[in-house]
Amino acid sequence: MGYIEMEHSFKRYQVGESEIIANNDVSFTIEKGELVVILGASGAGKSTVLNILGGMDTNSSGKVVIDQQDISHYDRKQLTAYRRNDVGFVFQFYNLVANLTALENVELAVEIVEDASDPATVLTDVGLAHRMHNFPAQLSGGEQQRVAIARAVAKNPKILLCDEPTGALDYHTGKQVLQILQDMSRKNGTTVVIVTHNVALAPIADRVIHMHDAKVKAIETNSIPRDIAELEW
Image (cartoon, rainbow, N blue to C red):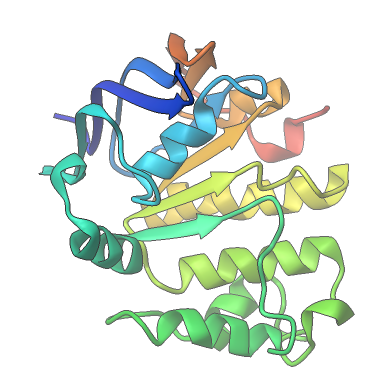
């Protein structure tokens, strides 16, 4: 078994008399420590997959096995504990607390988990040693995203889930952020899942899951993922 196994997963929504299928028989495997890109256009169902993997949403049927635990059967309390202890989230828009410094934003996240990393050390690791006492409004977009990554990483999560993490960033800053995420996988052994519509990111991944029209259309593996420095888009 893989570290993450999604098996015949469906997500259905009832809108009036109509049923919308956001995920239609989705199955894939992710190994521990891989960097995985889930690729697809808007509306393909990829963010729904991410939300289900992160315990922010539940599927309608099928299995979602994380580290040998089927979270699709978890109740609300179990899902809350799972999100708190096992998952780090990085979003396109940084969701920082505006009246807290960079350091305080990270400290806020580590207070809810055991065995967290030192917030100042993690901010230093993402290149923000000189900015940790600044407020979000005093930081560039790339710096804010690095704070958001530090906040997620400081929890020492088993899985790092990233929804369009470079979507609000310029080219050079986006590459810096991707380098941090790739290093988390290669050097720290964190399982990193990036959802994106940007086809150019596919070569950096160990595994690429292509989604279209709520289904997995193809899965490919890169035996030698490209270095971030070689990326262009």
